[in-house]
Length: 177
Image 1 (cartoon, rainbow, N blue to C red):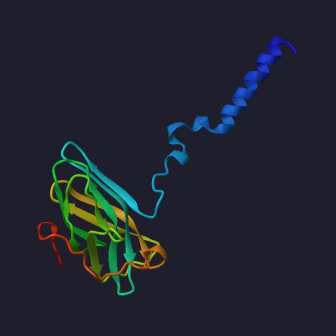
Image 2: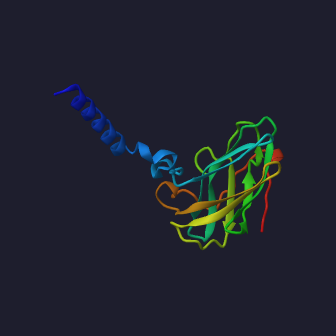
Image 3: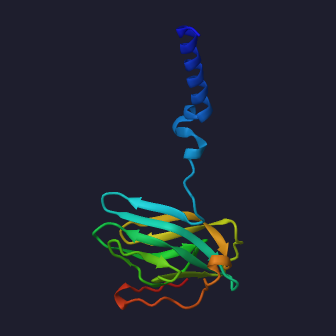
């Protein structure tokens, strides 16, 4: 095989390899556009004054037609912020437990390490669809996400609308509709 044919073969193999691996799709490849890998949705308020991260946020629909918030909120700034309220599907939720967001001290809704609870009554959105959840912060402002609704089954079987979370008086607020 001549050097010319060998070079042409190598070039052809390289061209086929590049086209088959999908390198030509660039930054707009559909596999690069996937961002949500769990049921919970994420939101961020990051600027010079705020660094609030909302992670794994979803809503559990209970048998008594209540919506219970599940997720975690973390403030990475030195200056504390306060969660003033939560609205689920347009209904203001009753918020109990820790609402002051100190630096790197997570506010956790539901689970074994929960220190906050948000429950909205009269919730009729079925499991499997998304509903609007708005979080109101004193410094960071308002954050609205479309969160997945799950039924109170499987890993969410212990999520109920009862048993408010207790926290120190300085960090507890209660809001009703």
